[in-house]
Structures are given as C-alpha cells and as structure tokens.
Amino acid sequence: MRRNFLQLLGISLISSFLLPINFLFAASKKILNKNLSDEQKKIMFDEGTERPFSSKLTKENRSGFYHCANCGAKLFASTSKYNSGTGWPSFSEALPGAFKTKVDSKFGMVRTEYHCAKCGAHHGHVFNDGPSNGGKRFCNNGLCLIFKPSN
Image (cartoon, rainbow, N blue to C red; front, side, top):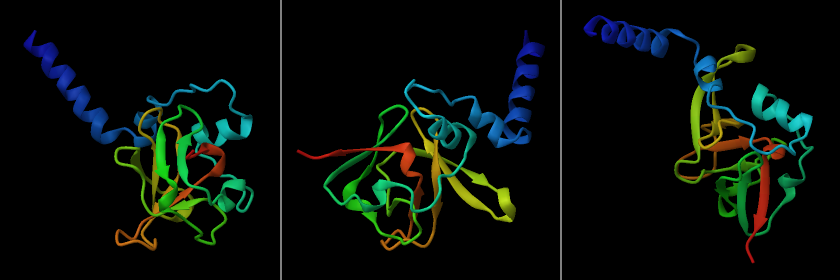
C-alpha cells in the first residue's frame, strides 16, 4: 500500500513538472455551448486568433458585462474596456477569478495566455502595457465574448 502511494506521488510530481502545460490545461477544456461556430471553436479550443478589427465588440461602448461565449461566465465589466488600437476588444482588468493563465511561447515570443477559469476556453493574451494602475491589457478575441448590456 505504501509503495502504491509513493508511486502515485512520484507520477503526480513528474506530471506536474515535466509534462507540457498545454497538455495539462487541455484536460479541463469543455465545449458547453453546442451552438459555437467553427471559428469560435478554433479560437477557444485550438488557441487560435481572430483577424484584428473584425469584432463588433471593439466599438461596443454600452454599460454592461462581457461573458464567456462557451459557458456564460462573467469575465469583464464594461468599465474596464478601452480602445487599445490593437484591433481586439481590450480590458484593463478582469473580474476576480475569471481566468487562469499559462505561458505561451509560440511564434518566438513569450506571452501570458489566459483561459476561462470555468470552462478552460482560450480567450487571448494579457500584456503589461495597459492604461490602468495595474498596467494590464487583456487582449481578447471578440468571438469568445458575449456582451450583456445593463438595463
């Protein structure tokens, strides 16, 4: 029994430190919204990116909240949205606990990628060049969001 416990502990430690984070993260991803388009699925579950300036949400200025298009989790308040000029909806801060992050080193650069904490869907990257005191810019794919205006 002790030997089995030690084997499980060893396997757990090895998988925690040696397996690629992508593999570990992918296990938590679940398609919950069966109405997602192929493009949304590619972005949210294959970590793709939509074309810049293609999202109608870049020009959305009403008061409300932005939710995950897959699971409906509330992610951003409209008060944190700003025009970054990058072509994607940008936010200076996320709601507490909305996202989990990981390091993305694709394309020869190191970036911080963020995923919905509830369903694991990829949303975008966070950078340290934002306008607020925290200095963050959450650069989000518009197809990953649903905007719900305040009444």
